[in-house]
Length: 213
Length: 366
Image (cartoon, rainbow over all chains, first blue to last red; front, side, top):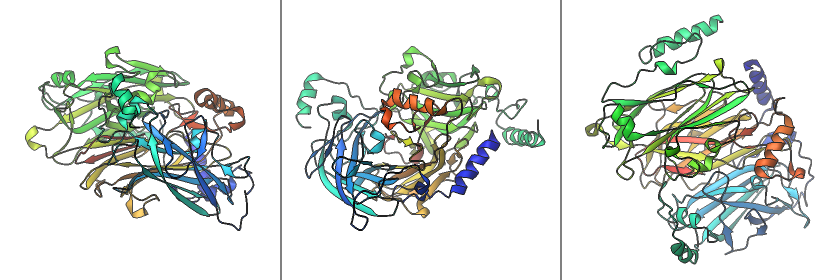
């Protein structure tokens, strides 16, 4: 088994994969099975819209829009952030999403390699919404980092894509993370939450807090 | 037994001689033989031998009440425990061993006793059950750890804000294709050594960060996944322990000191951890590891993968079935993808474990 493992490791080395890093184009992607053709004009700059999903629908975000905080498989709350892009090679795209508290400049981020899929509007994009691995999974809560509640207040959302040709585009929006009345979300996303703090839910308190979300 | 294995056993026995009594008939640490701390100096937790049959991934969750452990170790059970040194011995075949402080109780409850699960099914495999449980100690295949924290530095158990803590010891053994468990038996023994109150100068904080929703697919075969986790400290902190965890498609796990603000990978000079061995990842710790992170900084971590065909026993049909069952992936999205999950043969992980001081909070970045 170790011999087989050695061969596998040697094969990986021989392929010449790129160093890791969320902002680095991955040359190994050239050898991938992704065959989706270039979307748009290769001579034009990448045109980028930022999207978000609550796992049921994916919507393009505009300045000031709510950003859903979603319960992911491992717990906590995350924002699933995607893109609609034109003039981009959609295979093995490095997608990076970051939520920034502009009063401290602190960020939480997620960067990953995804294949964008052709969309009916002529763009290439993340999704479908049920496939959360195609989105940047920004780990927002437990809120052990921001200087304010992670709901009901504006944060900067910084999203970038880098295609395997090394072409990059970045877009920044101000969004308002929202718990949509989810009581545990309101608890673990509040300013000052400490890991293990009780989130005993009081129905009356929930209703009142939900209004601030 | 090969000459190489004989030399390995001899070397192990020589190194371990002062710590443990005896060595097994092959290169397998004898968890049963780890000598517990002397009375008043600490305590021991042990699972005893348990069966890991061929073709099985066994993941079990054991619970220990700190006050009970303290009493058994000749310590005052009403006082906090100043953990200063961790010894772990595991029989070969271990995939990971984590110890967490029990907090919010969901699907795992100390009152219900040990939970023994197999092949990805059961509460001990479900990470939301310990989503807010701070890390205390961990190790992976290789099976042995002996780490004394820097002078005066402790991890305080039964702290004033949680004076009656329970610990969960989670052990994962694999006896399948990608890993094997010799003799089909697992065992874990852990010693916690303490430090007197008057010698304590600082507390340790821990970070557990996990990338979920990872996907390593035939058509996206070399993905990387990067994330960050802050210490939320107004002053610089020092990282003194780290290890990374992924499965057999993992080719590189990196961690960097990070300023908490940058959205691109920190420079190579800031890298403090690298693992190129999924099946025997290094456990970096002090005194060799001592890296300062600026105020409000944290850790940037990256998992890089290479898609490989599944083992014949699993096949693409197996990973696709898991993808459909667990993530409800529609048929047109199936691509022989390894997804997030605890079963080594058919799923992947990207978990970072970091130890630092002085403590601000224990941090989970999910």
